[in-house]
Image (cartoon, rainbow, N blue to C red; front, side):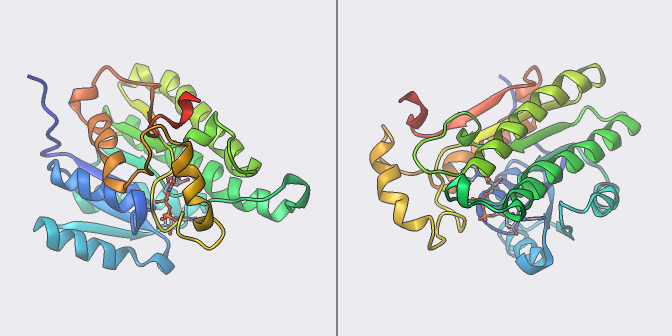
Length: 254
Ligand SMILES: NC(=O)c1ccc[n+]([C@@H]2O[C@H](COP(=O)([O-])OP(=O)(O)OC[C@H]3O[C@@H](n4cnc5c(N)ncnc54)[C@H](O)[C@@H]3O)[C@@H](O)[C@H]2O)c1
C-alpha cells in the first residue's frame, strides 16, 4: 500500500497566513511535514504559524516575504531550508484576484496581478528549483493555478485568468526542464473556494451565481482542496509531474 505520510519532510507554503495556503499548511502538518508559513508582513505569518503550532504541537516556521521581490525570495528559500533543517516541498500559492472589464483596466492593475501571480510564482519556482538542484533533493513543487487558467465564465477578469494560464504553462515547462533532476512540478486548479479572497465586497455578491453554475451545487470549502496538495507533495505522487488537479465541483464540465 502506497504511503501518504510526509513524516520527515519539510515544506514552505507561500500565502499561508490565511485562506487556501493556511489550509494547505495545516494539511501538510497533519500528514507529518514540518512547515514554514511564508507571507507578507501585513498578513502576520507569525500569528498563523503560532496557531498551526498549537494545533499540531510541533514547531512551525514563519518567514516574511513579498513574492514580487526576487532578491527576498532568493534569501527566503535557503533561509527556510536552514530553519527547518531541510526542504522537500514548496507550495507556491500566494495570489491576488481582480475583476472588471478589460476596457476599464489600468496598466497598474495588469502589472499588480501579474507581479504577484506570475512574476512571484516564477521567482519562487526558480529559487526552489535552484536549491533542490544544488542540494541534490528530488523535491516537489506545487503551484496554485485555477480553473480560470482555461475557463473564462462567468465574470470579466482577463488579467487574473491570463495570470493563471501562465501558472499552468510555467508548471508544465518546469516539470519537463527539471525531470532529469527528479524534481516534480504540478499544479492544483480550484474552482470557487470560500476564502477571504471571495469574501471581498466585489466578489461576495456573485457567490450565489457560482453555486447555481456548479453541478455539485455548492462552493468548495478550503478542506475540499487540501488533499490534492498533500497527495502531490509526497511519495504517493512519485510518478506525477506536469499534471494539474482540478477541484471544482464539476463546474468546468459545462
Ligand atoms: N479562493 C478561490 O476561489 C480560488 C480559486 C482558484 C484559485 N485560487 C488561488 O488560490 C491562491 C490562494 O487564494 P485564497 O483564496 O486563499 O486567497 P486569500 O486572499 O485568502 O490569500 C492569499 C494569501 O496570499 C498572500 N499574498 C498576496 N500577495 C502576496 C505577496 N506579494 N507576497 C506574499 N504573499 C502574498 C496574502 O497575504 C494572503 O495570505 C491564490 O493564488 C488564488 O489565485 C483561489
